[in-house]
Image (tube, rainbow, N blue to C red; front, side, top):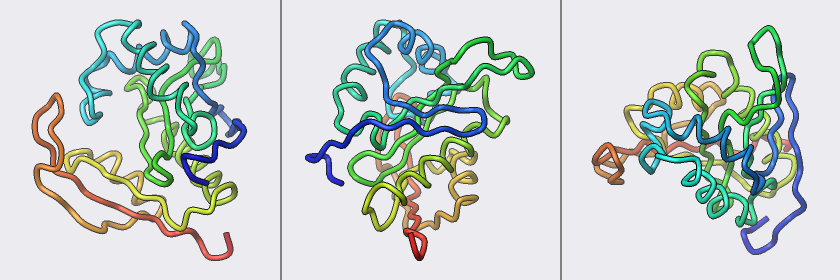
Length: 188
């Protein structure tokens, strides 16, 4: 699959999550704004925390809804209702996806850290990539200071392929990158 050959949207389900394409609606924007306005959640993202729900709505429309990857290899993470975890309705709590063919990225609202949601979403995304695309490897570019994301990727078998100092300037200054890769499992 390439960016020039869009595929039908799919939904990925896990025991607690639904990964689906973004929608150009106020509820997706409002939910995702709760994550994207949080400074800690956005610390290692490529842009500063959002100031308004309208900013998040514009970002969703431009970066996800209009993308051929939306709902194909790039998804919103929707936590399903769960009274034990205090989730009353399906709620967008982040995003996880592969774009440019194979580079993985994910963002999860800080209120949901430490519950296994990121691992659940990344696991579903990787299984989907192996089953539904022809990519030979999934890659990642992670800020060296982002220990939680690095640990999660290593848990799935990602290996460091390189590092670069001052690879990107963001709202927190110059960032050093760790590059990782996970080869397609044999037989997939």
